[in-house]
Image 1 (cartoon, rainbow, N blue to C red):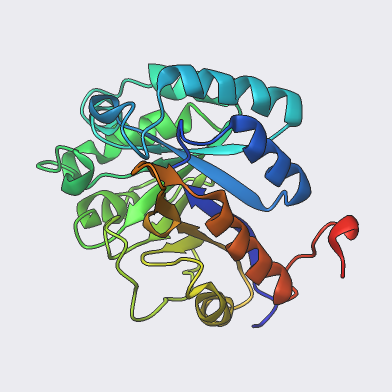
Image 2 (cartoon, one colour):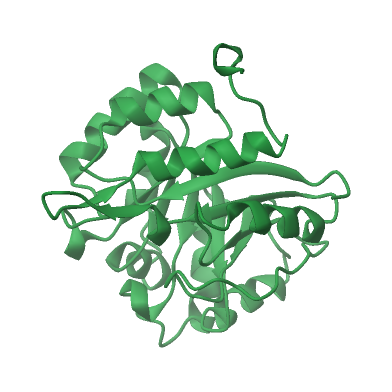
Length: 259
């Protein structure tokens, strides 16, 4: 494992089906957990896409519990960033407890991908204005014009930029291999990860990490259709993943939960 550190265990898609207080309870016991909120205005209120009212409640809970969050931008929230350089929404996130911003610049996420290469400098300008935020670029074949443009820019990769390796492009398909982090930036891993395979994925990722700090993220595998037919964010599935991390000795359960 070469002393690879799992810096975050990401659970994306937290929405109105779960109480923000429940998320804070988990975070306070397992601070390596990072809950992610998907922001896509045209889908607000649908499963996986929280309402503004719920996000405001989450922000209050995050403030009082010191919970840190990740914002996963989709649709118009990415378009306004890449096409217009409009960072007004980005500026509102830090006060609400968000510390990492993932840019999902793919068509399946409702983004205009016709000129990603031409958006590089616009994005870099926004990133340079927000040193207190970490920007995660989804790295796959479709987003190559964006991340490759960042890599080859005259200024190099900004210190607050990392990349998420996800060849599934957010569709939840498991990767066949996990690459090692390059020298220039840190990476995380996503694509088909969930409670049923997390032990093997972590075993492979901690080797691939080659002594660096990495993270993993999941979304589709955390959904459950409840007895009323509702598509919910399943905290039970989240806890199975937490349990696997602790069983592997990567982190420990709180002392009151020790067997």
